[in-house]
Every structure is written in C-alpha cells, then in structure tokens.
Image (cartoon, rainbow, N blue to C red; front, side, top):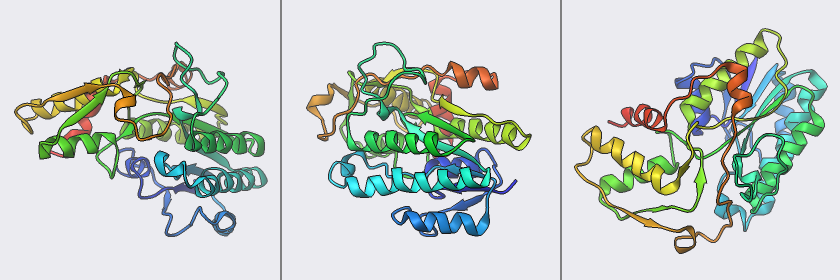
Length: 287
C-alpha cells in the first residue's frame, strides 16, 4: 500500500517508523512546506498515495497566539488540501488532533460526540482542521490525543528529564488534568488502523486515542522523576507543587480535558498499559 506520512521529524512519525515499524514514505516540512498549501496538493498529485497519515502541525501553542496566519495555513488550509485529494482520489486519511479543541468545562471525560469549544488559537485551528477533514473527505479517521511524549525532540517528558538531570527547580501544576500519551503507543494503534485499512476496511470517524490514566501535570512530573530514580539516573528529586495561574505562559488552556477512549479501545480490543510502564519504555531509550 502506498502510504505517505507527513511530519517526518516529529515524535509521532519517528515512533511510527522506529517503534511501530510502519513502512511508508516519510515526508518532512523541508520536502513539502505546509505554509504553502498548494505545494501539498502538487506533491500528492505527483505520487498518488492510497493512505495519508498527517502527523504534521503547527504545535507551538504560545506562538500561535501571535501568529494565527501561520497556524491557519498549516493546521487548516493544508489539511483541507489533503482532504480534497483524498476525496477526489478515493484515498484514506488519518489525521491527528488534540484535546485542546475542548474548553475543559465538562467534569467527566470527553467523548467523541461532545461539542468542541477551543480556548486558544492553536485549539481553534485544530478544530477547523477537523472540520476540513469531515466536510471534504469520505474515508477518514481523526485521532485526538493529548500530552504526547517520547524520547524524540522537544516534549514535556524530555523537558522534565533534562531539567532534573541538570538539577534545575522543577514545578508541577496540580489543577490541570489530562491523559499523558506515549507516542510509541499511539504509533502502534495507528499501525493497527493501517492494517485494517489495508485489508479493505473503512474505519471512519473521530476517535479519542490517549493514555488510559488521568493525571495532573504534577503527578505526571512526579512519575517521570520516580522512574528516573528507580533506574539510577538520580538519587533524589524535589518538585514544587503549584497552580497554573502562577506559572502561566499567558495562553488559556482547559483545566480538565480528559478523554473517554472506549471507542478505539473496543475497536482494537486494546489492553491498557499503566502510565508508569509507558514512561519506563521511553526512558529506557535514554539510559
């Protein structure tokens, strides 16, 4: 099957290639610039893929507040071009989205049927990108995930890992909750989805796809530090427990954007892995 994966150098695409062993044409932003949506169309028309996995996005939540135009081109317009190609060429589209399409007002985990209401520019552009897929593409799966981490590049786990090793002061907020998600695990689920599609199944719709455990940022930091200590990387650690408004970066985020993942879990008969097990697998690559 002719598969294209956009976002070659990001943590999810690297996990697809190295942890899930997905055979595909991995494409970087240097090869296809999502800031030029017409270039996306030209590239796809040249190679005619049967399945496109979009791991590419404008993900700098802070910068997006002052650069909505760039976020819109990458997260909305280019996604629209992929959707249009898939619709015209009967191709499948797997698109990655985020918990930040929600406002966090719901006290229970969000299901796929809950209405979106983003609080920031990044979330807004991801919501609009989802709408592009739904409105323009007949064979699609939108996978919403949250708090993605791995040993690849810049992400929350790596920031904490490096800060702890340097002996920096560590902070963790106790009033923001989500589902930390291993990029390895998400990649393996995508690989299962690809397998079904390659066998002729049309898996269509929106799916919540994140780690099984709900955690505050503070508890996530604490678990990272605990695993580092158990593996002999540090002898002790200290975390300053805080609240989000005291260490804010100025971007409004949902306090409680947790996911109900029963839909994807049932589809693939998934077995939940603990947050600790997933963190251990990632940190083993760093030892």
